[in-house]
Length: 499
Image (tube, rainbow, N blue to C red; front, top):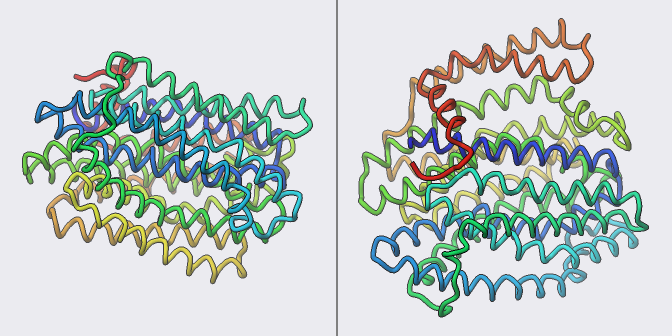
């Protein structure tokens, strides 16, 4: 199966997951709106969610996959897997207990602008939410193993269960005295189901062993710079929330709603291509096959930007009706709609940059260049913090979002420059020109349609017709290979097995 085919199967699973994620945000908007109680939940969830991204979306995957492939090649794969599983069962519960204990101590640092009652609620919720880290940490380990086996659909679709748990928790919140607690318990239940679903296909492989193996040292060496880099990237979220806690109530929630829409193309496109390309680049690096590395990177860049750039343009043109359609009901008012769209526009400035950082980070780890991602992400984080401090007093929530967007642009360019020095010749010039032309034509047609026809339609019709028109206009610019890969991926996605 080609990279595009595997990436499309991963993207299909991620798309299902992201649809559930949007449904989760719709439920939160309906039952909570943009309020102080939901702000407390987001701050309480911030550290467990950051650690989830460190261990799951980045750390474990990019450290475990190359090491397991090497150990398997040398005949020590089963022994290594047993040791890794045993260490995970010991380490994750300890991390959860430590986080729950320390939650009241670090909460004032994260949300010093909260009044005492809201700060106390955030600390209680953080204690409840820390076991989430253990569930998704194991789920990430299982997902990485499934990726090595050539199965991309199930790991990418499994986060839908986490979203489903949050939806149930939000729906039940109207029946309890502390609504945010119901939401937190729903999140925990969904994370448990996600872990269970990923464990079932691996049941015969998940055996305990000695909690030591030489390969674990390699994982540790890879995890340290991965954690450092990803933690630097998370400084953006920490600083944004800290500054937003001093803005009017609901500011943190507005940022979160906008970030969810921003992460839709990031998750469906960039994460899916990164998931599919990591095993390929790792195998090519083990063989010292520069030509395969160059081809894989060129295909990855063209695939990522071929979908991210039109998604970015489409969200800018149709962002406001999308926000109104998804969130503009229940407790979510018109002011929240405008604020969320403004934050979304700020974030979208850097969508292409963050997508490339995600891809290039996988390439650096496959090549064993472990110190480069922390360096790149550190530069990006420093730019973000400086711009946050400069712009929050001028533009408020929008200033925080556009600072994040600009730092993503800078990070993407910097990472690409460093990667080019190690492996050159992967920039698909003709493909990028075609993508840029298609994105411009699509954006112009959709904008003209929206202002002339779309504004006269109900929100659903305006969004659906605009998205459908955009896809039809842009499709000819994709090229026949991408369209064939799309249909091949659709035809093969249900099993998600190796080909």
